[in-house]
Length: 588
Image (cartoon, rainbow, N blue to C red; front, top):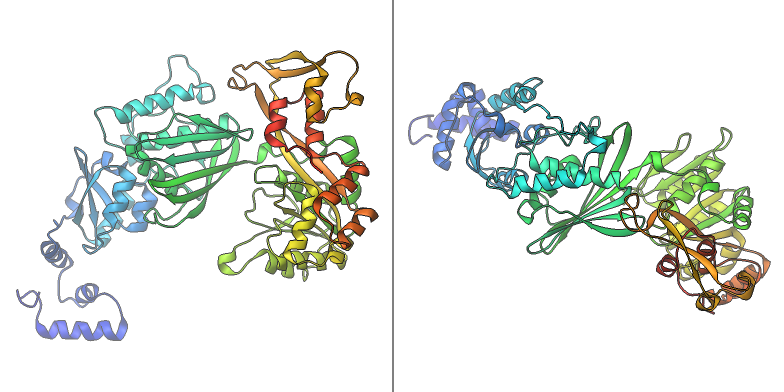
């Protein structure tokens, strides 16, 4: 600028001194001091960077271009889309050195990106003007009613998804993304029928989520491969393939989900976790989003948390009467530890929340530390663990003990420190509920021993261990009976006491529209309840293995997971196949 006479050498020297003394940007100080006009400065930068400069105040911005970039992203990155020509989107930015923004924009919009320079204040004014109330609504097509007059709840989700895929795979490859992710409030994604033109990526994401919710899925898995993408729903504990988006828009789908979860669209090398909140009808639903970098892109798993479907009544979870009595008796204990064990997705959180609801009274102080807090329980103080800032289970427990609690719930005992503090809490008059990842109840004892906890501490504090699984229930609509000979079931642990002479009647699901042809609808719990009696305490103190503890527990009346599953089979609630899928054969 000195060379071409826009500013003088003295002005540059004074500006550099002010930047050194007060900080700031060289160009901003030049403009604030009146040495150069902002329009001239931006035009000069654009020329040097080989980027066109535009005056937004004289520019008629294209509404189709606006629909491609969410308002939240435009404000955060201080940019605005101004024109769309063929498959190229023209975007105004204030900084010609921001060379990475084009990668983010390409991922969000699925288009080629051409950047132009504009004054920062003009960009802000344009965002306020064009993203403000009234403009986008007027330019969007009106919602079209379906021929059948069906509302969103009755629409053919599969047909809607096919329609969107045809739109994407057709001649028009322009993918329009609009911002329906208002994280200050809620998003209503039931309106997937609106606007047959525009925003196919947004509609694609909305349909995938809405379809999963309507099918009572617990998780959505969205996965990239070399030439295809895959979507699967976990329904009643089993993954089921679903229609998937074309691989060419996979990155746009991932970017859309990141924006909905307020995550960094540009970060593709590290795992990210976020939270998305939506409404379907009158129901508020949380989605826990996990993004994991893989060979061909980022895998996304959305866990669906529907508080309206959470069962908080222990009597409805599937306990047998004798097991329910044991568990309730232990819950009434003033101190000690209750452990719930099982793999991920076995219903441990539901059992713990139901237990806390049973114990929750105005005269009881209950604190929980969880990772994550899945559902909000009224009247209970819940703390989100966050190891990145030092809020671990162990540190949370220490803080709880200074809060005069009566009952403490720890999301999971993962290490010796957490286990030791839990035991100390139980020894000083607190009831502690927590989880462990073990295959059965007796293994929880050896797991604590392996962590380094002294056997006499385990035997003196642990009151009960509950192992559990979830098994699919036979669909009530297409349930049908069939007969098998008793000999066919003896290998599963059935004895002569379990049946009378003759064939045994079992049940299965034939498959219908209600259960999507699977023969199953809903799940029920299987429970292995092990009380720590005097005999088991002695075995713990002697450091006996899990098989010895299991044998003693069975002798005292404990039903194993396999026995609990077999009972559900004989009652006509589930099938032999389900029993074999979720439980292991008893040994020892």
